[in-house]
Amino acid sequence: MSKTIHQEVVFNASPGQIYEVLTDSKQFSEVTGGAPVDISPETGGTFSCFGGMILGRNIELVPGVRIVQAWRVANWPEGVYSIAKFELKEQDSKTLVVFDHIGFPEDEEVHLAAGWVENYWKPLENYLG
Image 1 (tube, rainbow, N blue to C red):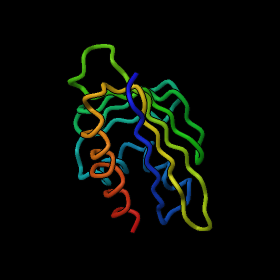
Image 2: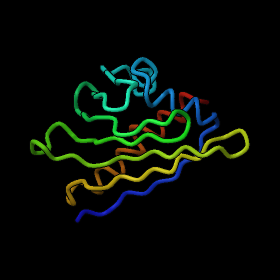
Image 3: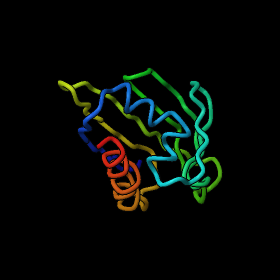
């Protein structure tokens, strides 16, 4: 069993705004520097981010509340998926994102943990102001 990446980040935006950015292809591409993005806004729909380097399927989408995805890096062995869960919690006029990533190959933990910060949280913070 692999370890868990647990991260908590506060953003100066509503849960609805965070949800929209994470589930909208155009906005997510803008946040992450313009790389090709294709995100289905539907439960069961697929997504591809960072020019196809990250792939997966939306398992659960609750607008403004939760996103759960079967998530993989393109160079992982076929059929290997992890689970990425974003819980969005309103705190005054801000949002606490409680993020958990499980089921990834153990040797990927350090790289993935840093990647969430560098490729998701920092760009999202810059985008939202």
